[in-house]
Image (cartoon, rainbow, N blue to C red):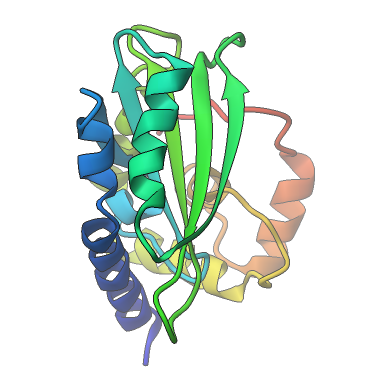
Length: 194
């Protein structure tokens, strides 16, 4: 199976998890707006099995956030949930991570960033994903998927590192990508938009 087929298969699996988990309904039940971001949205999902959502509420409360996650936790395939309260930072969000696993299947991570509407990052990463999607060519898509495929499972690399290296700086092989990462260390939120 080639890299494009693997990516397509992972996209299909991820959409099935979105549907079976009830994640969108859980957040909409508290009046939140749910937006897909990240590699599932851009079609660049490879080995790292994660699904990313940015979720917006005008009057974001910790109790409302927990209420939505309680609904999600009722799903028998949610194995674990973590929460980070960043409401008092520039990010003005509650960061949720859930792990979903159906019997005899792989473990998937679902990242849900519950953001106060009107805050600093409101809509920003949706625009980043949109721009990446618009600028991808067959050649850059393949280069990104190849780099993701060559990344060892133990290495934690955020998607935007690949996109920035390939789209902006022309990186096309893993050795050059490793060197590129040394020159461009991630020290917080990466605010790069192509």
